[in-house]
Length: 403
Image (cartoon, rainbow, N blue to C red; front, side):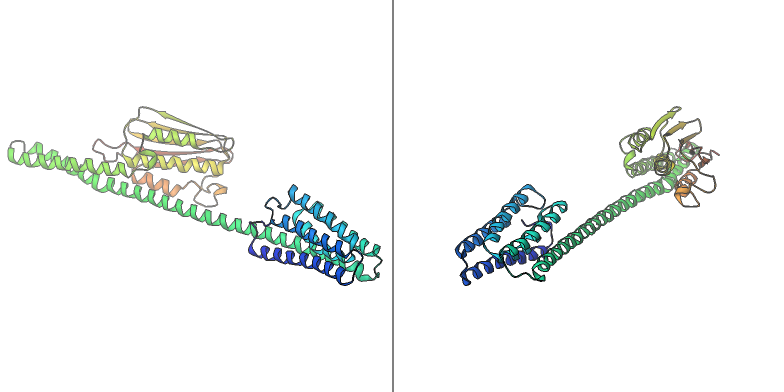
């Protein structure tokens, strides 16, 4: 009958209930024997039988609150108690532990009427035995029933509140762990991108410039064979180190770009972005060309940020991502048909004056690569985010500003 979900205090209460019922049965048997009642032997036998039925149900794993086994056990226990009531008026007081059992094991819609019937039967048996009638005859069982109802229902309410708080604490702990993991992941990705950008913008660019200067020196010193050989070896070393630096940049690229092209990463982003009623499509325009990793990172991150805003704030039914390769530039357009916002104020739902698209980060990426970012929107007219980057020169340096 024990419920493992309840705290240890419930076990202590059950032990007190066991002791109370056994004690009252023993009292009824002893009084019948000491008073030399006409059915003393029968009272002792029925009291022992009731104690045995109670012990069997208390130890049975099948007896649990609100199940059929509990109802059958209570019915059997009540039947034996009725027999004891017929034999002894002292059996009235056994009703008190029965109240608690009925309230604990039966659903509320059945337990309350059962408690009322139990109190009424106990009082009626006391009267039928011809005992002296006084206010205590009625007040005792009724007051006991009221105390049992208040105690059990109050305890159950406190237990439910405790369970809700425990679940809330577990949810908060789980959420905190998830947030910490997300922050660590975001920090790792951000650091990888920073290192890739730093290597590209410093080491790789410096090696590329050294290679160009050495190539020019090699052409100038073509008549001097030893000098030309030294310059050629220096140029080859710079070229090898440039290739190594670019390998490091590729290794530090986001996971979405590790196993495929930028177009494939954007296609996956479109397919896995889900929201009620939202359809996301992706298209490529022009002839794709290989882009340096910082370019791909900037384009992918811009698409992710803009699309995340569409899902969270726009309430759009359709969104389109278009990657366009032109003669001197590459551009990314993310367009949705959502609620839009007033330019200069940002989306109302974002709650910030600078907008909810991560615009500072987007514009910073665009500026670092010599590109431009534009955002066009109007209330109920959707939103369009466009990032345009100049294609890099053959040596890997950023081209002229596309603006």
